[in-house]
Amino acid sequence: MSIPRTALITGGSRGIGRAIALALSVHAQQIAIFYAGNQQAAEQTVSLLTLQGVQAMCLCCDVSDPVKVKEAVQQVRAAFGPIGILVNNAGINKDGLTLRMTPQDFDSVLQVNLAGAFHCIQACYRDMMQARWGRILNITSVAGLMGNPGQANYASAKAGLVGLTKTIARELATRGVTCNAIAPGFIDTDMTQTMDEKTLAAAMQQVPMGHMGKAEDIASAAAFLCSEAAGYITGAVLQVDGGMYM
Ligand code: NDP
Image (tube, rainbow, N blue to C red; front, side):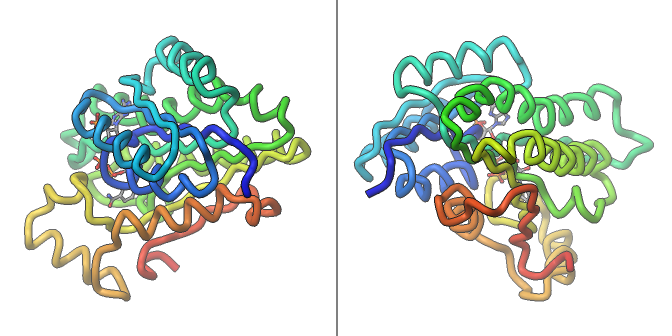
């Protein structure tokens, strides 16, 4: 029997975030998800979690807004108690070759993917420190480890997340709080469904396993890193990418 715990997953309405929320129902009895605007999908995740016997709630919260994050985390705390597990999964991409990328497109991707994770960590930090237990997991990307043409903004944000992960891991290591990252390769979600056939075929050439991963492949790794069993792992970046980057 696991200890009653509250988990918060950003971007839990769809794709990888939804799969992580469902996989975490083994380790958390209360689960909150943040989403950007897709209320129907968010409510569907809540229904799926409820079917798994978990108390669940969804909140529309733009993670790039620190004030909104603070308020939303407070709402979760009021309903479900202190947050013990935080998964920073919310992410966007606005791809384009560097010469044509606008400063706005560079900045907005950093604000959501990188600053968003920082705001959420800051809002949950004390809960975990005081409980002397916590799990923080940041979803980065192989793009942050190896770079990717057309993704100067996204790869910078994801590389930044690696630095953030290692810093938080060091800050909280003596408090029983771990902070790790998962770097997915190509995963079949809405984010990758916009790729045309030619781009997809070229991408698969880079993957030794020769096919895309599923959201569940990330979720099972996430469930492990958020479990008791992973208590001595911190500051790690786990690649779940079919061998793409090694
Ligand atoms: P999706 O596009 O399928 O889902 C994105 C999720 O993030 C949605 O829940 C969306 O909410 C939410 N979101 C977007 N912007 C914000 C915001 N400002 N505030 C709060 N929530 C927000 O993405 P994936 O599931 O594919 O990706 C999840 C994570 O994994 C991302 O960080 C992505 O960068 C990373 N990743 C994905 C890869 C892939 O191949 N798919 C590869 C490597 C990394 P809403 O539904 O309301 O729009």
